[in-house]
Length: 249
Image 1: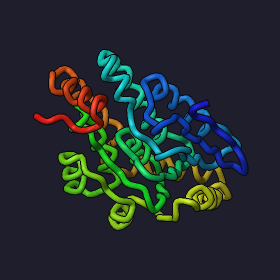
Image 2: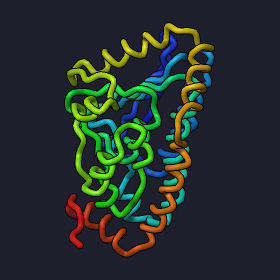
Image 3: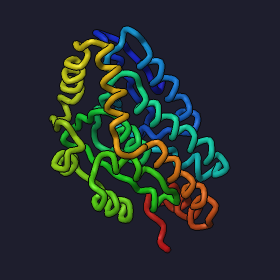
C-alpha cells in the first residue's frame, strides 16, 4: 500500500511510500482525509505520527497528472483542502517527521500539524509559481513570519531545517538516520498522556488561533483555479515535466 497505518503503544503511525518522490495524484490526496480521521478517531490512539519512506517526505502533487489532465484541478484542490483540514481537525495531536524535501502539499501537512521533527537534511519549499499554480502560503504562514513566507513564495526558494528551527517552525532537528527513532520517542511522550486531556487541549489550542488556516487555504485555491485557466500555467507544467526546470517567461 502506498500509504499505510500501524497502531502501537497508542501511537498511530501513518507512513507515505509512493515512489519515486511521494508526489500524490488526486486519488491519493482524496484518500488521505479518511486515513487521518480514522487514526485520530480511534479511542486507542493518543497521537498521530506522519512520516515517509523514500527519497523525501513529500513532493506535493503529481505534476504529470496535472499536465495530462488539468481538468482534475478541482478534484485535486478538494483532496488537498480536506487532507490539511483533517490534520488540523484531528482529535489528537499530529506530529510530522520530515526528511529531505517538503514541497507543496507537504507544506500543507506540516503547516496543519501540531509539531514538526526534522532531519538535518530537510528543507521546505513552495514552487507553485514555477508550476503554474497557487496555494500553500496559508499553511506556511502558520509556521513562519510573513516576509519569510512571501520571499519563499515569490522565488520558489528553499527554507532549510536549520532556518525553520531558528524561526520556531521546527521543534527539533535530528540526524537523518535517527529521525524515525527520535520522532517515535517524541510521540511516545504525548501518547503517555490522558487522551481526554489531549483532545480538549487540541480543541482549545485550535480555537485560540488568531486566523483560520483552512479558510485561508480555500481562499488561495480560488487563485489556483484562476491560474490553471491561464496559458502560462500549462506552459509551466509542460516545462517541468519535459525538462525538470521552470519555464522562462
